[in-house]
Every structure is written in structure tokens, then in C-alpha cells.
Length: 150
Image 1 (cartoon, rainbow, N blue to C red):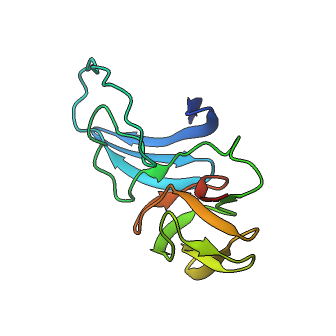
Image 2: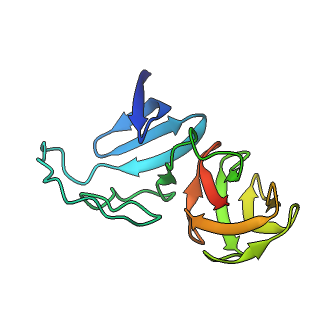
């Protein structure tokens, strides 16, 4: 088993390649297992694009096909007291707020499915939603910023 540490947007992820057969691989990212398919084994050169000011970062190339969608990787660092972070890896099953919405402390802002259970993710404080970083259906890792409350 080979292990690598990748830094994506300032957040480090431990990636272990557990098994590799031809174009199929079993990998673990921070303990979450994924089956991925290598689309092309030739090295590609990515062309950088201008920075897009958007809550969801644009990607330079399409993501590889996988049995589970690629985890959201908004950095866990930064953000501030109003950042609502994922407490565990899972899949976003609903985003209950939009940018500009007023929320109260303890109000459910995101529903996260993890280990076949629905988890209500709540606002840490009263305020206004300043950023929504995920969409319904996104896979997220632990510590990823879901929404920001200002």
C-alpha cells in the first residue's frame, strides 16, 4: 500500500492507494474509501484559468469517474467563528439556507448523511449566511466548511 499526502487549498489529505488493477483503484482519503477508475494513464498538462470569485471553486479539468463523487475540499483552516464545518465525512442531502438568509444559533442549515444516518448541522451563532460552499449531493470530508455565518 502506498500513502501520499496531498495539500488541496491549504488542507492536507492522507491518500492511501490500497489496490490497483489495470485502470481500477481502491483508495482511502482520510479514512474514507473510494473506488476510482483511471480514465487515461498518459500525463496531461492542465492549463490554468483565471480565478473565479464564487463559493465553489472552478476546476481546471473534469474529475475522474468514481463510484463516489469527489469529496469537497474547501479548506478547514480560516473561516472564523461563523464557519460551519462538517463534523465527519458524508454526503450533503440538503442545504436549507441561501446566501443572505438570516439564521439563529442552533438553526439547522445543512443535512449531512454519514454512516447511513442523517445529521442536522446547525448554525453556531445568530447572523446572516455570507457563503454557501456545498451543494446537495456533494461528498465532503471532515472539517470542510459547509456555510459561513457573518
